Amino acid sequence: MFSNKKLAVAVTGAVLLMAGQFALADSTTDIVDALVSKGVLTEEEGKLLTKGHTSAKDKQPVVKEKDGAFSLSSPNGKNSIQLTGRLHFDAKYNTTEKQDLYTDSFGYYAQDGDTKSMADHFNARRARLGVKGRLGGIADYEIVGNFAGTPGIDVAYLDINKYEPLGFVFGKFKVAPNLEIKTSSNNIDMIERSYVSQNVPEKKFGAALHGELKGITYFGSTFQNNDSALSMQDSALSTAGRGTVNFAELMDNKDAVLHVGLNGYSSNYQIQPQTTGNVSDDKDPLYPRATIFTFAAGGQGVANAYRAQIGDTFRTLGTASNGLGNATYHMNSNNTASVHSDNVGLEAIAAYNNFKLQGEYSSAFYKASSTGGDRISADVDTWYAEALWIMTGEKYSDAYKKGAFGLVKPKNEFNMDTGSGLGLWEIGVRMDAFDVSNTSMTNAVGNGTVIGSRFQGSVDSLDAKRTTCNGSSYSSYNNQSQDGAGCGGGAKSYTASIKWVMNPNMLIKANWTHTKFDNAFAPIDAGTSRTIDTNTKAIDTEDLLMIRGQYMF
Image (cartoon, rainbow, N blue to C red; front, side):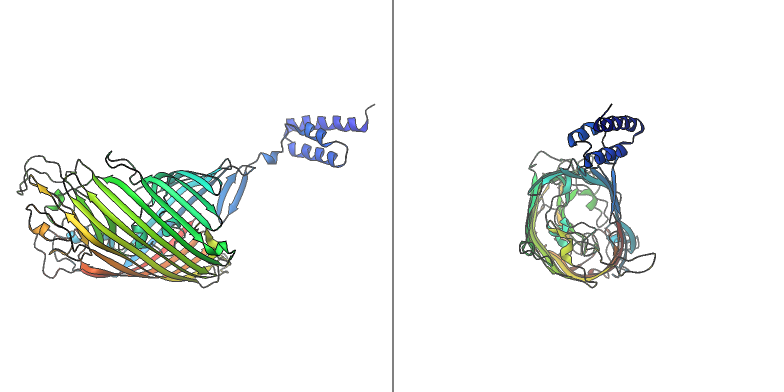
């Protein structure tokens, strides 16, 4: 005769056998737990009986939804995958007087790649889709493809960050040179970033160490400026670093952000000069050139509002008919030009509840040289200052994390079904500028080969076509050595913004940007080799009205 205890063990064992056959692990585990709780079985006997019969719910993936995004994770939370994406769809209206900028009857103006940036248009500014998640509880990963413009990899990295004070990331990622770049394009304050962010590298292949302590972050990376190597010469990897302190967090003030940061980079890389299809002069397409730096007008207005280009030798093949010696049109250089750039920047934030002041300043130096003997250099300063106010009362500090801002989420989301909820409403203003100074340039000419380094756009000294510094390089093709003095220039832009965040997935922005160029200029490469009419106009201001509809998850 079995004792009650032995009978219970036997019955339970039989149930477990049946559970294994019919996948009733959850029920059998509950039975054993009940017997242990009533003292019929000891804990050791319960563990022995349930060994190998893990609860089905402990094996099932966990599906979560947060802020409109779905993720799938392992039961222990150590592994996960989430679909991520964004669509930024823009409408842009340019009020600049575009008619009669050129009176040339051949229509080069209307077809030019730079002047068409002044056209009114719709645009998918960003269209990205990818996955992100966690691996083994020790690392985050993200792989995102970009489908706007030229498709390609946006980011692809693994970030080993089990311990917050020290992490290691490698792949293609943001090398963290400044506050605006570190802030996701989903969460930037205006529709477009400022001139500061036009003058720094963004997403590059490399590796970095980073970490966070209370109120303090640091990030140090090494990266390559090009997606592929172009030369063994001067091929030292580029470096970048950033450190921030939030004094409000150090003082345990959860309503404020008092942030200061220092950032910078040093870069050595190569670029290959290319011939162009521009039409500003019938000899220009001969020149292989590479752009060292360039600025679009505020709000991504007119392209190449200012640019610096290094020239190099072109390939010789036959005899040209224009008297320049052995040459051929549209032949790229076999060689690469070497570029070195340094940049240091300061950043600051002062935010309290629903009001924020933010600004950055950076100072950069560029120098480049080509195998053909060209030399070019310049100093570039950029800065912005902005003030923002959330009219619906949400706090900026709620969105501040790891030295940058995420999305400030609305307290009362707008409900499309009922029309209730205000969402989040924000207004703001920004002033930003770039200034190029201390320019120098040497154009080399030898063996009938003309080299074409140049500064273009809103430049202090322009040629007769109002596009390029040092008109002598266009009026004469004799040997020349120019110091490039007086080729500086710049612009200031003023932006007013209003933003409506309906929910964490959808928002609408509207910006108006007025840009005042330091010097009136004609959009580059839009002329012809023929005589330009004396009434040819140049632009000294630009006004943009922009609206963005944004969806992200």
